[in-house]
Length: 357
Image (cartoon, rainbow, N blue to C red; front, side, top):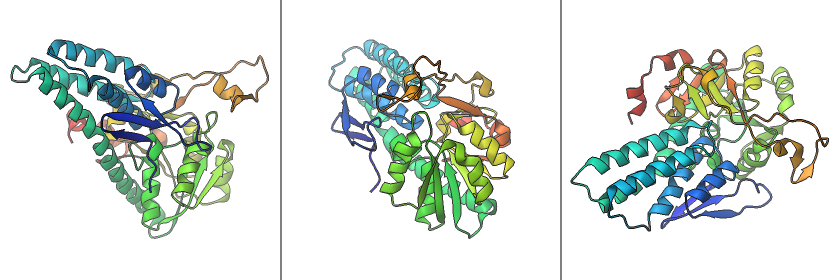
């Protein structure tokens, strides 16, 4: 049974507090937009797809019990609060795109004289509901496309060994996962010999969350420190690296959890295919390259403390970017629900194709 990071039932929203995992499994109620912003910003919920879904659902929780007689006030509330939610974690593009799409929908409904305020609210809430089902379907498609790409790229009928970084599974999405969804598909197809996951310092999403999911799913898995990747690739045959993405620029440059870039460099040196798995909404065609991606910086306490225990010398200065950008030249393929694209192929896609279902 796959883990549920998001519970959405009868207008009530709860999220699995990922700060407490793997020691404690506790769900936290999200009662509105302010709660939504806080759980995203504090990384109680994380992963670009999950951030977008929880952010939008937190708005649904807030407006569901309200009665609107004026479409203008409803539209203004939707726009203001969605823009506020985008500010919680600026690097992940999915929340931004979801906000833009929902604001566009609210504008269209507001201008339609045949739609009442009550109808506008109902249709808006249904659009948010649909995001959950679509995310799971998209993730399963990503899993199929990614597994096939890895098998086609030299693995053939052999069992594969793959490496992943950070957490990209059910805990980072509505369910199933992106990069971990690819690994899950390989395992289901009996093609997975071993998955290696990194600790993912400084916040240990790999050790705390990915390892937790892999054990839960009973996959053959091994945890390694972030600085063991080069030694692993030298000593053992790794079929592919598969990671997620918080934002992909138009040229294929990809922002993902800090440490991804150095893994891509090492993979390139050892001729190991390097794949990025993400929903199509993670591709930001408005940004030409990775230099334009805003990189979030996190509190230094995430580096200096573990479980409230200081592990770094007091007084030391810290630099704690949450993400880095992997150049397109190091990426073998970008796996989406629509298929696998090389960075060069990605350049040929236009915005109209991006918005098609």
